[in-house]
Length: 84
Image (cartoon, rainbow, N blue to C red):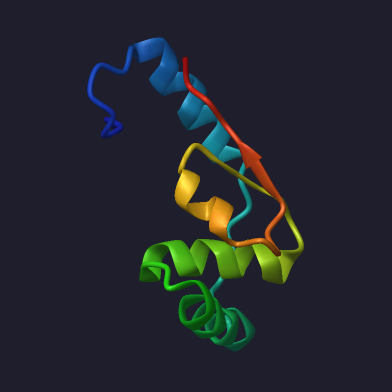
């Protein structure tokens, strides 16, 4: 399995794979779909971002990201990750 980030080391790849294996997978249910529509209309976000935001809001979980676009969603608990 190769991750898409250019220049990623094998060690970094393994850390990410181990992290992903511990993540919980959920199905996009009708509540998440409706929340996605609301988020997209309210914040004018791209569909993939809207799904991510809606899922975090639905599950009442913080979102960890390095994408500053998510900062415009004031109702979202956001943890900004900076990669040095």
